[in-house]
Image (cartoon, rainbow, N blue to C red):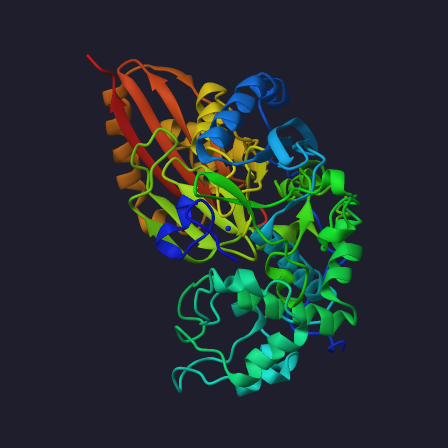
Length: 528
């Protein structure tokens, strides 16, 4: 299915935009109830959690942005929503689902979301992996023997495995827009394609290239491993457990008053696009859903963050979701811009049915877009903020929203803040000891605090001399600031002094009683 620049295209533009059981396998995920878990760990939290109130305050501006965008892009109808944690807190629509019947777009209306379906397929594969029914490192031919006939480009090409299909690294060519038109083809067509031979654009595991065919093959694997059509497996194991009762695979199953009809803009008028039935390629883009239903799926992805120890009862485990959110074959886009249009390099990669981007300001987002004849859709969620946004439209290959303007609202106008990691007990204790050490160099404290490497890396005499020089420049100590943790065992803090600020960074050992292994001091004089 075509994924335009607003969604997902090959790497250098990623940031513009997304019937048999096998034996237990080596990478099966094991969740042992007997494992030991820390009782002292505290996950990241929001300092002042007013996200809901803040985001609700921009509901009028959101509606205006969507209406203006739809008018500018000639989109007949758009539905959109914003999720915070597990709640759809802002939702709305503009325009029409069906022009001929003048049906207004609503948040309960069913739009085809195209390639946004891919993460459902990836999640189904991960669920089968977690259950020990397949391994991501399994050759795809173990499940689709017809793939054995494929002719690779080079003799040193690795055999395509399931993870290659998941991460779009099988070596298949980018197949937009050809793949769109295969949506309703039967399984026989897909198997015949393999038998006749697929043309490779790259050796497997060499680079990323967007492939709808790869996801069609994943759907086939799900069907063969689960013993039921992949649509049924996804419905029973993902959609229904999430309460997505108004999500469909076939458009003729949807009440007509809720079905979004697809259009293209041509000759200064809207023209009907053909509504495609479901088929073998549906695993790459066949799902039809509403904002209200899809918000439950976005909430589920958000629930994966942060790692923590409370109940874990989703269709897949939180740690499995976080695997899906991990980029593969990442690349750097030096020409990317932020929501103000200013240069902001972005690292982007494709995970499992999802694109992951982190920009120069540290803003991480997970996303995917979708487009088919008659439709354009997108969703983005920000794991560190617990916020997800989504929009669906019914115009061919057209982004349904002005994403950068929405991001500017969220992160500049509202100034949303991410979760912050609390200081661990051991880190706070060691901060106090480090602060004492660099001012007193007490032998008793050294024995309690320092790791065996500490004076091997730099002698006691040199460390003491360095600290003395810094404190002499700083003058009288006035106060010590709170530590800023990087994780449970590493952080930095500062000491405010008469003539400036002493900056301290330290990291602890992996020993049970974590000790000081690394220490850096620097002085920042006051501006005169």
